[in-house]
Image 1 (cartoon, rainbow over the protein chains, first blue to last red):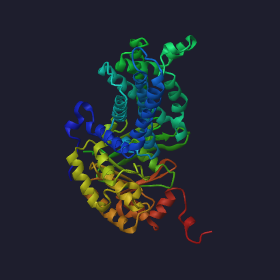
Image 2 (tube, chains in turn brown, cyan; image 1 turned 180 degrees about the horizontal axis):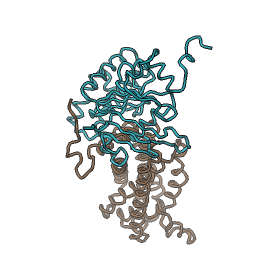
Image 3 (tube, one colour; image 1 turned 45 degrees about the vertical axis):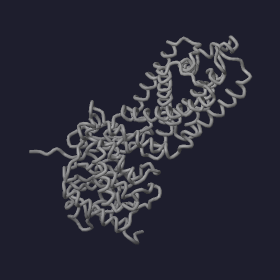
Image 4 (cartoon, each protein chain N blue to C red; image 1 turned 60 degrees about the vertical axis):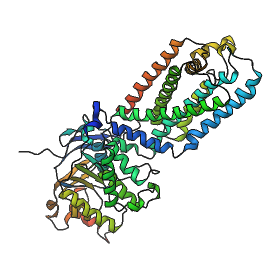
Length: 267
Length: 252
């Protein structure tokens, strides 16, 4: 009888690359079973936001910092959908594995916790990027074509995908039913993202509300993305990067810890 | 010269977060090449022990080694050698038969050519060819069980753990599976089998262990269970704290 062993190439640098790739392949296959929910829904939602707020309402609003309102609002709408795509991808990915128990397939395999987390996050980033590209094309159809700094743009898309991918994993490990799965989105993500400057500048807010904007991490995400697209920046840029890297470090460490103790994964 | 056991468990204890102690101070060894029957009533701790061996459950205390490799500290190396067919279906029910088997090969680091060859062979061996592109949820209970077995074998593990593999399957598949398992064992695979069918254990296994209340209450070569009239059934019932005549038809 042959005794199959992992080829050396698959363990390069101590990483089970094929195993990692298989997690991504499996998730890609799962997402493509629901393309309307995964991609078409955020694109239609973004189209409506851009049409109503950017085109209809925006037609009656003066330029902001030399940019048409549709160009101002596009980064916010983009960020709203990136956050949603990342959070939904990682919660559904982990929760369905737990719910149908096929998480056990990866638990019994020679995969490390880091490989499992990176596999999940990679697919989260892929879904966010596909969502972002679609929304950018919709924005272009409405004449919003500015791209001030492509590297900064990619940074914010990837960083926010990772942050909400990690948050989604933590929630999916904690949740014991679908109700709990949506709680964070309803009570935290949606309200904070709307007041984070999607439709307005901080200077439009009454003075007593400005402190709330600066205390809201969504403000830094939207502000960073807006700066990368139209060069409009209202906050301390370094603080924005600090918030992003800080959240990735804290949530990444927390997720790794939960995996290593088997929280929500192992009996 | 002593051989390294395929499974070496020392003082295993598993307590759940609820406080339930499913396994307490369990020690046992399975030798390489053995066909090991693991018997016990429902809730005795069979599946929990298997879950601790394979990494589905965390170990509260004790030691588990697979071919001499620590299954907790060096879990990646240990798991490479194990194929598991669990009692309950733990698959993405919307995935196709081919995907389920292929993905498992991928998790174990098999390249595309290896996966294709093994998946095709196992799909053919388990008579799943005409169902290969169907989703798992479209299959009958017996076909689902075959898929789970094919998945357990895709990486050609040295140790095969089968948790009630013939529960709910028809006679034809059961007989075919018995024949296949005997072939695999004859080729050198170590097999740990749990079952509620004593006939199955009697027919296939070389060594038997009985677990009750989270502890091994009897273990030995199969022939040791047949030294008294009543055979395995009587020995099993006595080991688990029952009298054989208590379950006789017509007993008051």
